[in-house]
Image (cartoon, rainbow, N blue to C red; front, top):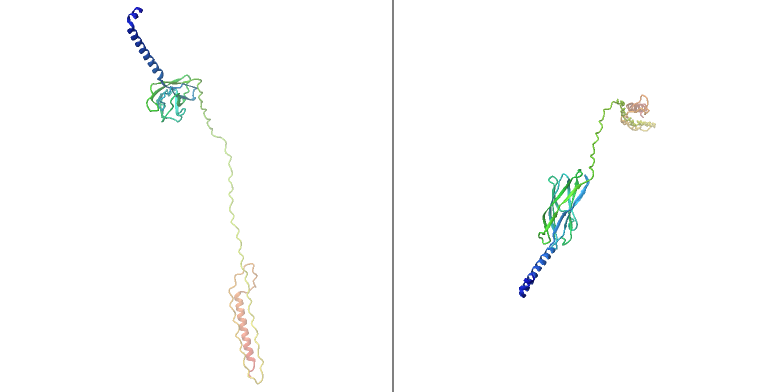
Length: 300
């Protein structure tokens, strides 16, 4: 070998050195390029729950590239007989808002996504949390299979390369006791003889006592007594001029007297009509007496 190298001469050595330097540079370039390129990883965290227990499963994006991480669209499949997915909520800032999610607990899958105007340019972030409830099946488990539909940077452009890491939910502990409903006792019909209750007497309404209305007491009006007529004494030699006799007073008819109530004290046998007749009779008697006296007086 040494003899062969010596036989190359000076030009051969120079050419060999150039080839070695080019090869070394190429290897260094490829090594540096591979070290500079990062692989973004999306991981679904595992969870261990007791039968019937509720918990959370995190979804984390790590090795965020310098071009940033601003959005995602993921699908996770699971066994709905082992866990029930109740909701998908937000993660760490700036992914704290709840993502848009479509949950199907019959098929056992959920699709959720979120998009930002601009995101972090390094590190890792919890982008979402899955709220799940374990079935009452100790020892059961399910794989949470992650599918990355989209992973975008701040440009936005797809992030590449990336890798997905599946998660799982394992149920441990004792099964929860199932409460057996206690049948309600059957009500037996009562054999007790009911005690008759006497009817309540209904009070008879008493009509109000009528208050007697006081009646006015009849007042007797006194009858005017006729004044006696003066008879002139005759003078001899003088002509006797008869003095005109005023007509007898006319009795004023009395209004009918009101009916006397039991409280009025009336004169026995005298009524208002009787008083009128009495007054007229007395007037007639006075006229007759005056006429008689006039006739007895001699004319001169």
